[in-house]
Length: 261
Image 1 (spheres, rainbow, N blue to C red):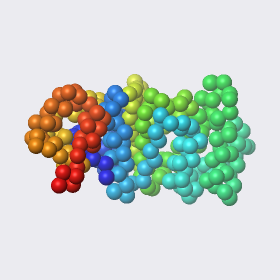
Image 2: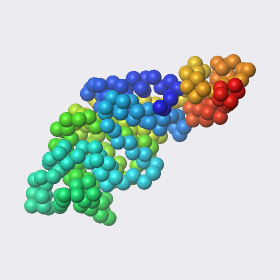
Image 3: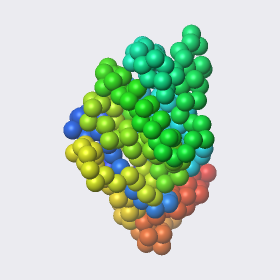
Image 4: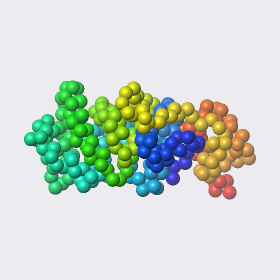
């Protein structure tokens, strides 16, 4: 289980995200070490505990568009993608030539994404991404099961995935079962469309209260020896200016209660 110090408002917002369709997008912005990844790991655990399957992408690694669609397709399954597996033939849309085979997960997405990812000029690549989103839109509108998509380190997202994500978010009002959380030192900005209505934005500035770190100290079963726990935490919170990654690392390095015993 992931343990957090504070960020209560953000956790409450996420629980609302799961339970209410008035909020479908959660944006978390903060500098490195502010706890964004820990929050996303916690959100993943909370969603799975509620029976909501989710897909988490860490964009500081190499996340490409075929991986995004491939992993989402593993969750949705062929039966939930009727519009993608029928009527979008070459005769109806010659630009996207989708060949659906019996080997759905391994073959279908490879065939589909060959049409999106060739080294075309930016204008043509954008057109292909839009067409791919058009193919998926009706399927996402009719999902019967909830889908949670989490993106970490948004500022490292490659251009193809970023373009598709912007298209995806621009249509979020059409997808009642879809929820999205994006975290990063930068986050998408929405100055038009209906995304604002469904989005909440939080700036993560650290956790500087000793009281908020006391449960973490206890959860980790760490001890400060002869020092008063709260006074010790006040000192390190001040020294590290509430920086969650550094404070958690210091607490994790303390002796455990068992070692002292």
